[in-house]
Image (cartoon, rainbow, N blue to C red; front, side, top):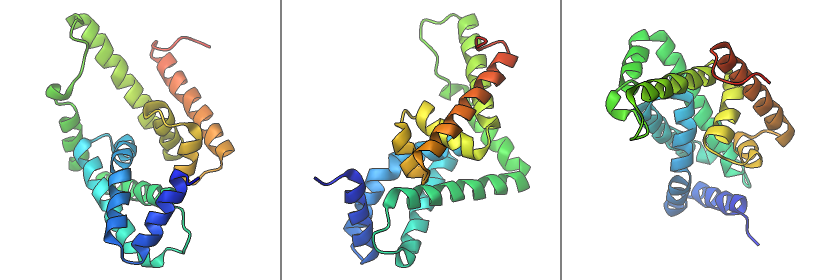
Length: 195
C-alpha cells in the first residue's frame, strides 16, 4: 500500500527529472497547508500568499540539488520556514512594513464575530482573540510553528513532526512548552483559568 509520504516523494523524484506535471501535483497538494502554516508565522494574508509562492519557487530551483529519495514534506516546510524568517527579518529592518501589515489585519471588514453577539460580547471576543494572537506571537519560532500546526490548524502531532522534520518526542515537548506559555500569558491577563 502506498502512503501519502511515498506518493509525494515519488512526485518530488519525478519533478527532479523534469516532470512539470509532478511538480504541479506537489503544488496543488501543499499550497493550502503551506499557506496556513505561513500565515501562522506572518499573520498577514497577502504576505502568507506571497511566501507560499516563494516557497514553491525556491523548491523548484532546489530540485537539481535534492538527493534521490528525498521526502517532500520536510524539505518543503523547511523552505517555507526559512522564507518566513527572511520576511520577518525584512520587516524588522523596515518598520513601515510592519505598520502596513498591522493596519491590513486590523481591517474591520475582516473581523468575524457571532451574528447574535451584542456589541459588548463582540468586544470581549475581539479582546480575547487579540490576547491569544499576542500569546502565540510571543512564542519562539520553534514553539510557535508546532503550536500553530497542531492547535490552530488541527494537524495530528505526528504529521506536524514529519512536516517540520522533527522527531515526534521533540514536537511533543515543544507543543507542551508552547501550551504552558500561552496559558500563562492568558492567565496574566485574566483570560485562562489557573491550573
